[in-house]
Every structure is written in structure tokens, then in C-alpha cells.
Image 1 (cartoon, rainbow, N blue to C red):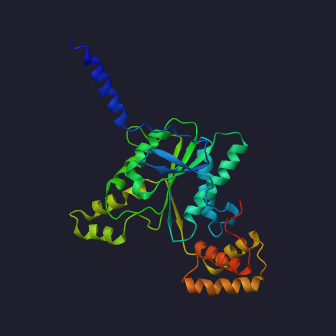
Image 2 (cartoon, rainbow, N blue to C red):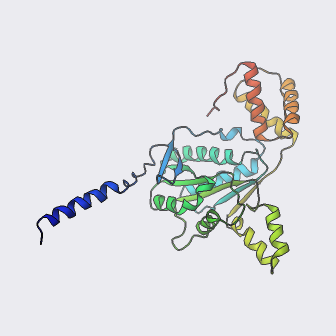
Amino acid sequence: MDASLPDLLTRIAAALERLAPPPPAPIDLGAAEGFVWQPAQGRLQPVPHIARVPIDLIRGVDQQKQIVLENTERFARGFPANNAMLWGSRGMGKSSLVKAAHAAIAAEVRADGIGPLKLIEIHRDDLRTLPDLLNLLRGRRERCVILCDDLSFEREDADYKALKSVLDGGIEGRPANVLFYATSNRRHLMPRDMIDNERSTAINPGEAVEEKVSLSDRFGLWIGFHNCDQPTFFAMIEGYADAFHLPVEREALRAGAIEWSVTRGGRSGRVAWQYIQDLAGRLGVKVSTLPE
């Protein structure tokens, strides 16, 4: 055999190693309390400061708040818990509630010496990579809440099928240390006209519709959020005003809130927060970040 052949093979192997992409860095869930999944790099990007409101400032959704808190606490303490879909009116605090509940329960279990609870955000367009994320998290001691905000589908694409498979559990099943929360403005995650079209054109309308709504059925908890009335809107406004110590009389605060809601075309937690931002700016009070 040619004596130069081993050297040639060694050089070829070294060249192939240089061309191969580097292996992904091991994930460090101790780097932060929150992360964003970046599938292209196969890594979790730490979030130094999660944008969220304290749980006590979320008003008008007391029943929903209690359900999310109890479900999250059971999960954090190692007991059975359900994947949850928070659906309903825009701006009523669906994603804010998930983030606030995570903060409250993470602090509670940390004080009790129980393992850490992490929050991981996955973008709707990255759902097809959800199985890869679950494989990274499977078997770790940290318990992780995965949040997909503003979830909806226009058709049964790869993301739809990936999420459906994960919620079903597949052969491996959902990791015991992972819980999935989603928020959506649509109860069944798909446009109503798409469901109606299936009903009118399918050979078996009932089966077609059942297939379209089957994804949302796979969430153990459905938590509805609805438009708030004026007293609830006032409670939201006053809660923010008290938290930031805004120097304004109650009557003036409420009068301004009514005018603001009329110009915005409705009442919601988001509208309340936008009003407080505007009012605080006019009063010269800095509220660029919410109090913890």
C-alpha cells in the first residue's frame, strides 16, 4: 500500500471536520429564568429581564388567573398538570397572565427549595421544530413552561401537524418536565370561514369539522377571556395608577380613561396600560418598566 495513503486520508478527515458545522453548545438553563428558542442555531437564547407585570396588577380575570396559577403550581411541584390554551378577546392579558404566573410560582417554589421553573418562548413559525426543543429538555431537572403567543393557523401546515403530534404525545410522550401554554384570539385556532367551508364542501361535514377543531381539543384546559365592562376597566386603571403613585384624582383618572377607551374603540387590559403610559408621560412620571 502506498505509504502516503494514510496521510492523505488523515488530511481528508481533517478537512471534512473543518467543513462540518460545530456541534451546538450545551444549553445552560441556569443562565436566566426565561429563554427564546432559536431553532436555526439549536439553542435557547437567555432573556435577562422578562417583560411582564406583577400578578396582582392583572385585574378582571380572577377566575382565569386562579386556574393558571393552580395548574402552573401543580406542574412546578411535580404533580400532573394540563397543557392550556388561553383564548379570547385581544388585549385581555392572556400572555401577560402566563408570564406573571410563571414569575409568581417560580419565586414560590424557589423559596421552598424546589427545582427551578423556566419559561421558554417559541414563535408560531418555529412550531415544526418543537420536537427538537423537547428532545433538548427531556430528562433535565428543570421544569419548563413553553409559551407560544398568538397561535393560529390558516391551513394544516407542518407547524399544525407538529403541534398536534406533540400534544398527542406520540410514542415518546410529552416530557414530564415540560408544560405547553398557548394564547390565541381564536377558540379553535383556525378561521371560522375555513371551518364553515369544510362543513359545506366535505362529503362528511361532521368529520371534516371535527378534524379542524381536534387540535384545540388536545389542550386539557381551555381558558376564555372576554371583553371587560367599565367597572373592571376602572379597576385596571386604578391598579396601575396606585402602583406607580400617579398624582391624579380618581374622578379625573376615570374621566380620562373613558375618553381614552372611546378613542381606542373598546376596553381591555392593553388599552388600560396604554392610557396609563400616556397619562404618566403627561404627568412626568417614568413608568418605562413595570414594578415587580
